[in-house]
Image (cartoon, rainbow, N blue to C red; front, side, top):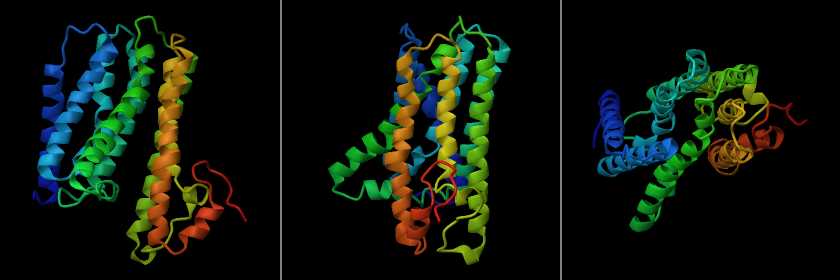
Length: 287
């Protein structure tokens, strides 16, 4: 087993660089559809990461993929289009900010390959065949497909017919501020956990007084921001509202309940907090 945080992170970076580079080289360049090409590139990279996680016996290798993968995809779209630099920046800045924020969280919190996310351990807590099925489809492939699907609205803003509009400015600001929200929420939680006296207690102050998952609210807002940027082009079809709605469903029906259940097991005061506090929206607590 690879031990040590720095060694693990350097190995992780190397695997990611190789995965995206090799995946790009092996993606058929003759494909005319830009998004189909991106999808294949994205899937090849996921397969590469999956193989690495099997070899290292640790699915947490996939953790940074959520935040890292969109960056080369968005840069590729910007390079392929003939849009203005201003349009490119309005889209790229909030996305790069989001990616940097999540990757920073990973750098701070990930302990290395001698640690694996509890959610992955729970998912794989079954027989070997079923565990590997869940590992590939549940931990690796499904999140990749969700992220790829939710990035799809960007195809329309990076169309050569798209222009900078007031709606794009507002959408870009909304996306940026959503990332600010989840960043502030994460920092508040990190400060709370630094205090040893708070061990086993529930964070129910500041933003967390009004929402059990304000960081997730910001994350969902980010993906709706991607959608808003896409429709600001005036070229996107109505059905792409399904893109951010699928992300909303993922958090409402999977991520939030999973975190709530874990907190109920580990914190005696969480049940009362859960009954009084909104799951996502910032609302006054119930009396």
